Length: 168
Image (cartoon, rainbow, N blue to C red; front, side, top):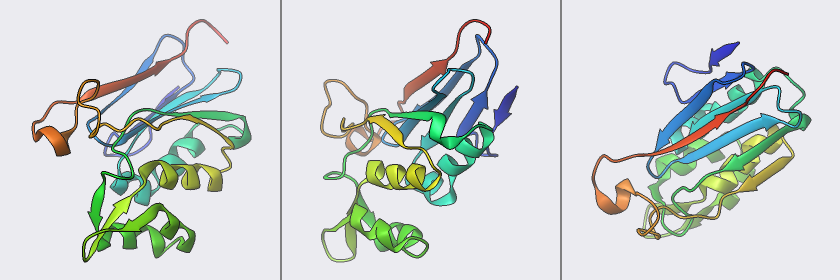
């Protein structure tokens, strides 16, 4: 079973062996998911728009298993000290979740620094996913290892991949 989670192709889920799930990202957060027993996997491109629209919650639901059995891993993304956004981005989160305000730090007038990882962790926790690892790698501040659209202003992308092997 392969499932495209949304029309934007921002997430996918499968229970099939030898099927590779992939997302391309520049500064957005790639999230890889697996059940603890490896029978279902998922992947999501979690930029701020996708996070606000529920891409992680929808991916967890599409995995059709107990969320408490899901393991999540965060790839590199723009870090909280580098991701400057407008009030519209902050409002997209705090209007439905007042606690999400803790993921934003005031910057210049009418600007905020957003913590994508913290927002994703909140969304996964609310969806019932207790196990999250990875993260902590900023695409913008580490040009030796990562592409960053905000830094480089070019259209390159990085890829994240997850797959399961063998029958289950």
